[in-house]
Amino acid sequence: MLDVQKQIPSNPAHGCMLPTADASLVLRSDGPHPGRILFCNVHDSYNGDIVTWSDDGGRSYRYSGELHVPGLDECSLAQLRNGSILLISRSCNVTGGFSHANCETVKDDFSDARGSSTGAGFHHFAYSISNDGGEHWSPLGRLAQTLTPVCQASMTSYKSSVYYS
Image (cartoon, rainbow, N blue to C red; front, side, top):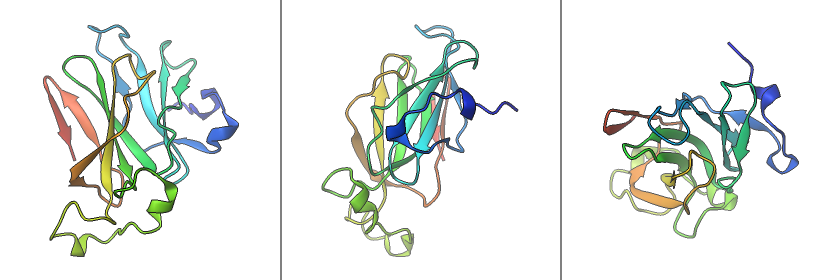
């Protein structure tokens, strides 16, 4: 096992930047960045996600800070059929947008969440798409139909499908 933490460039604005528990993603050979290694980092709890990548087999890394948005936590990556990358992230997006302050009121007990999956106060996934191998990301969207678990979720792609658990 290789400790990549020493190879990830530091940025004082990101503070503590730690890889999440989700698996890394290696891009398919039929796209513009064949073999690129990508993985998610988290900046503390609900302080934003940072996608890190390597084009040289893990000898050096670069990162995109575009998803370093308060309220995001523990992202997961999957490559779509067209080569784009889908990112989902646990989020404290209530109805007013992404902010760390929203996390204070989010309920982690789903015992009362059976009635409505769109009520304010519950975790919903945020998503973003990259069309350039993870360097830049689309504006964040909210997956209102999904309630996130209190722990990180995961997704993977296989052939033309993306699987979520």
